[in-house]
Length: 400
Ligand code: ADP
Ligand code: MG
Image (cartoon, rainbow, N blue to C red):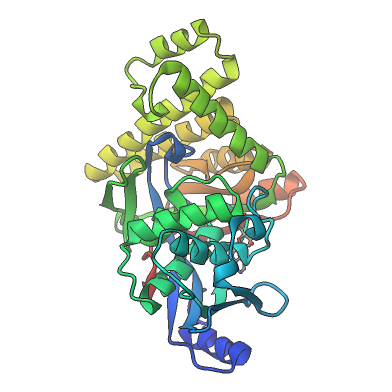
């Protein structure tokens, strides 16, 4: 999957597009989130791991202030921009991907310049991208594209940025330039994950810990089930969920829902009712507070060396996403129900919701039967066959 899509091929493609040799080739991965959904923008906890699927970039700097962007995954020639003319309005802020795919890497250059890291005409480059991260599948192809761009520019221009700083600048690009109000998880996962580990991240202060996650050693497999559906509802729902969480935090007088203790949750929900908060908003709060708790539970179980036992916590996380946060959909629920009934240890939707992917924790010996059951259930329900592959915890962004 990543071999024939190696540095050799992307270098050859760069040569074909631009007629010169690239200075180098960089890679940044997509991710799946093990647990901690919609908690990052509530200053809470998340636990993603990087996939072996990566966005590669071959790149060279330019001295004339021109930025050329080409993707082997999108039809059409190179997009040519002047770095000094990059602005969020022209780039498509507000609509989410309105400026087309090039808004993601262009937004990164804009964010580096906004931060004062590239001045004058600096930031020009020729970039050619190729990715094995499925797009729009909830596996963060957008973050991979941003982070590979920032990582390449960091090296080409000797900016000395740390991976967390790269992640913050990429989030700034996606929020302000592309116009997607995402949290910090995806960019942190792509920039900071390490092979064989899940990344425990505190989204408030970006404190992180690499948690060993060696599935094979325990005879386990984590399957990604890409439902290959993306319901339109998703974009507006993300913003409205975020707004509900922020309103509830304001009503409670806390900085973010992360500050609501799990122990006093029932009392907090009663207080919200007294304050006139509607039932849906109270359910949103319950999801966020219990989800942070589930991240801590998963950490404890992994630290205790008991990976199998995280299964029910994943399934409980799915129920919370479905019933309290209301971001699941028929296809994601079908994966979880079918996989668990066929012998999986636990499963849940992963990513923003309304389609995209689910994860399934399963004993190695049961993986084929569970995959088959899910594929058959999709067929019986009249859905397109899902794409199923193992999530092998892989490395974060790097120069190849
Ligand atoms: P996700 O991040 O879950 O895959 P998004 O909707 O956030 O979904 O991002 C997908 C978008 O990112 C695509 O529509 C495209 O604009 C851009 N993108 C991702 N990978 C590539 C690529 N290899 N080449 C060009 N554009 C890409
Ligand atoms: Mg994305």
